[in-house]
Length: 561
Image 1: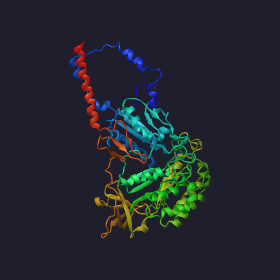
Image 2: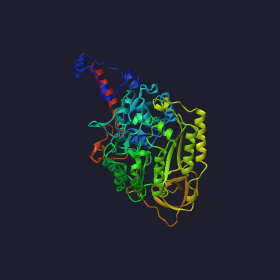
Image 3: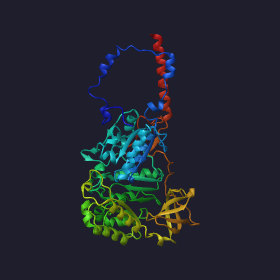
Image 4: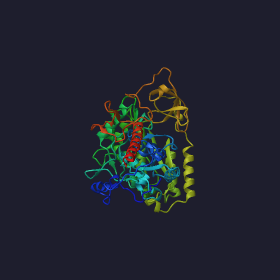
């Protein structure tokens, strides 16, 4: 809901301006104030003890996240800090006092959902705080006017921003984090977080990228490549395993580019992380663009063959036409992509290669599109993300001559039909596999596990399987899944070295037994979470106590005067 203030507070430090009275001036003026007592009848009827609405840190917050796993990781960190500071995270938007909307700018539909959610919140008179790539890239959009914004590199200050939003102020934190002039990867990795899935840790290894793709809006928000140091990433993984995690996802806008800004590379990081993974736990690599993985193919093949690393790689091709790739400024040709796929398929038997394709990019001819169709026929990708092109405002591609809408729609339909014409997993029926169980299926009928190749395997929903490595016989294959029957004489193996957290539990906290203050542990030592780390009920009682004190003070003043 827009603030009643006319001007926008760009940072919390800006709340005190040079035109405000000095402490000395305020003290002098107080000598002329004559207190006015209220009547007792007015006192009791007008004094509403609205502690929840007056004290930041006592409200309920509903958070919605759109987009990639990097964005989901940011959302987990924001939720953790808010919960550690006394706020209550809720799954029910109607009971929430504040809506925290974490946006994605990759596609028009995602931004449309984000914009509609803002309007819905305002219609319900909710406080609104926005985060993610949309407000970072376009903070001056009309529909963001008057809203508090958390920049993608400022998520460690989410509590400050929400506190001010609760008080009716608009705060915008959009600056980049730097150290000695060098851009950092973002907020610290040792912040409190609430994992969406207590068994899975999402670690952002870098932010931004080295590309300048003509269709991409995310670059405007995340900027150039900035990598986290290896030691910080290894420490984050260690802490995750100590909290019962059994699967780690590495994410970024381009994992293959990791380390190029700090004098290291992705294979070096991966070998260090593999040393920390307990037996039975697994590591999944995130998306990598072809140019930055080409020089590491030998090492990457060795890593993907490691028993604790999924033999899975997401390598977006976008188009099989060199002409289109040039217009996209993708910095590789189709032969480069083929070389990556062919090499990994040869050196990593059974490897899963997932890819993305954009249909109807500006200037794409029928011949260009047929080259893409032929590529899909050749490799029969088991995981294929097909996207109809949407021109994003402010990108070079938006200014190019567009392919007619009906043509884009037809090409998207044709490619989708091709993808659904083959079954990539039929040959797996009859195999015996070890799978790691980490999730529940959407229909809540099965548990979801993944085999070595990160293929989805549905298994019976038995409590003793959750978070375990089990052995199954594959008896059915669908387009996107396999079904497995547990082997009778095999016992589930527990990869976690500690009991997993409960859903909604805050990661990274320890409780001081002497004073009850929560701290977060990191390699550099503990630090206080914030001024609202007291229990929510304690804060409520404190607010009521202050209100009662005001009643008593007014009564005394009335008697004196």
